Image 1: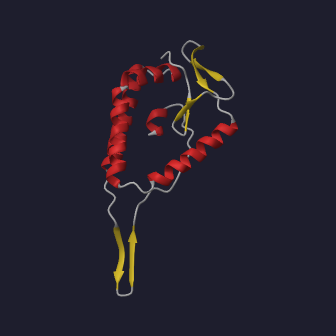
Image 2: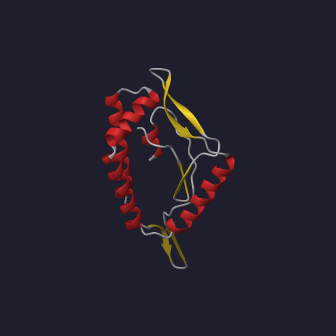
Image 3: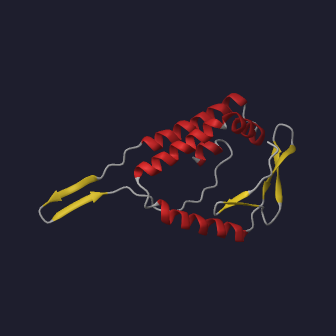
Length: 154
């Protein structure tokens, strides 16, 4: 866990303009890591970058989105031991429950990837046809609660 913390904005790793903040282990009451402290300008940059990424993402096929979600699930699974350790250190969750959370994040991501989103025919009569198409809507900002942060983030 001794990695240099960074933000990722527009695909680039950048330092927080406001330096770093300590991450406190609640069991010990001591800092065990640092996290980047973003400025409001960096937040605005991140939102703008996400909007640009969405402009491409919204035109991707269900198969492309499914493949990306599967890749995310595989990466979470590949890093499960380290992610579980981070969860334990950040919130004091028992290791067994941290592994449950990581496994749940993998399962949830794979279940989402497997969802079928067929066009739903609402009404079909002469002169009137109504179809429901499920498509990505846009960028979402989320601040997750402390208790299941990885599960909720996915």
